Amino acid sequence: MAGKKVLLLIDEGFEDTEATYPYYRMLEAGFKVTVAGSPSGEYRSKHGYPMSTDRSARGVKAKNFDALIIPGGMAPDKMRTKKEMVRVVADAMKEGLVVASICHGAQMLMEADVLRGRRATCYKSVKTDLVNAGGMYEDTSVVVDGNLVTSRHPGDLPDFCRVIVEMLS
Image 1 (cartoon, rainbow, N blue to C red):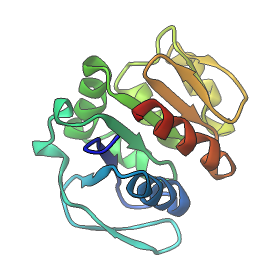
Image 2: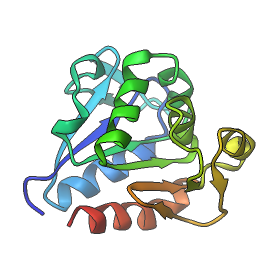
Image 3: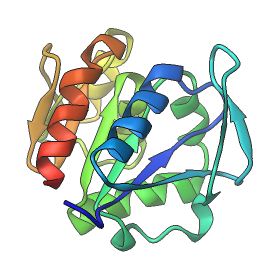
């Protein structure tokens, strides 16, 4: 378990709990967590909570990590317009990392075109988008399809984080 590396993507308007809960839970499990944005710097959550990045997504190589976590909120709608962030998601799937998204984080999976034929869940307002992107929607707290882990909303965070930790252990 020790030595596992987790990448957390953020942008302006990230959902507070969906970034901070996994961040601290992964640290608690003994994993090294790197926060990346585009560009690097400090971002504010939906409710004004500040979170600083460790690096820019531009220089991130997915193969250097074991897992990728994509929180929801309004951030994924911004992140999906940034090619370097979409590339990280696509590369993480190709490399076989544990790729975990919660809530609106699924928008990044859609943009990276990695949902075709995969079981997944997301926040109810993006369910139709998930299906239109080729995903098979399931309304449950956590869906695991191979290396892909998805959850619906902040209430699913305990299950979401437990599964990520289990998959990395």
